[in-house]
Length: 370
Image 1 (spheres, rainbow, N blue to C red):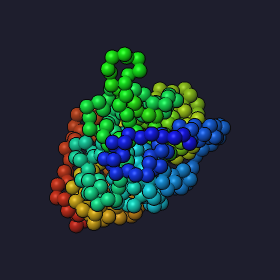
Image 2: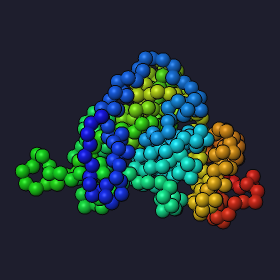
Image 3: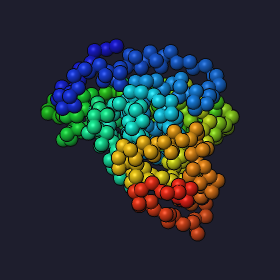
Image 4: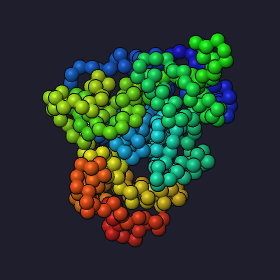
């Protein structure tokens, strides 16, 4: 392991006295050893979600949030992490939405923050409450762009990048990893921010299709997933379907993640539920409204919410049954295809029954989640 020098002002502002907890994220030598020792044989890497989480997600790992909030994100995998009661995880993602409920479940203890929330449904009040209660500790603050540059530097094998991002921002005072320096190519004063390469321990990325070795194909915005796949020490691919290697070879548009990065392949239809999988199913707006308007009110509400939606189901199929079963599948498939102009949209109604009460319904079976 190398010796590290962190931003002293940020350490003071974040009240971090033991910097050893920061080192693993930027430890190039350790990450390189991990990558060099990875088994790159052309073997079948398929396993169940329970097996993949048990083998590759360890207590104390630095974990990332793939996709974007609720779009192409392996949310059902995170629920399995909760069910297996992993402890003391750090979350480092942009956005960093799905680690909030892991704090309530006792899984996540540390944040490398960017954005938390679910866009149109609002800012995450639950996270703010957990932070004030001391149940989560912020280790660093990032913008979307700077965290992306950290992953990209790792993907390219660079020690870091110089950037103009964060200049003039107070985030410089709350990120121990970044430093303002003089642009080395300029003789006049030209401040730049050094952003180091960052290396998570484990990432779970949800894709449309993968072969049994881990070559993975997806559609739509990649966000940070391609860079994260290269940067992370351990990579679990969850896929809507497993296809033959020949299909990946001959239909290679969107094949962004090569098998050499991948440790485990999980066939996980509806793995992004209750989020959206482009071309496959729409997000459940009512479910997210219930999360934001009921669960986030109090710790008691959130525990009740987790008991019903996470601990109370064993897999994504039982989760979908609670959403509305086959009818939910048909309606969500119709909506997402209409939204993407892949289906006839005349007569498709995007109005829905908004959840506004903020109360637990007397009969959940009468709730419409589509």
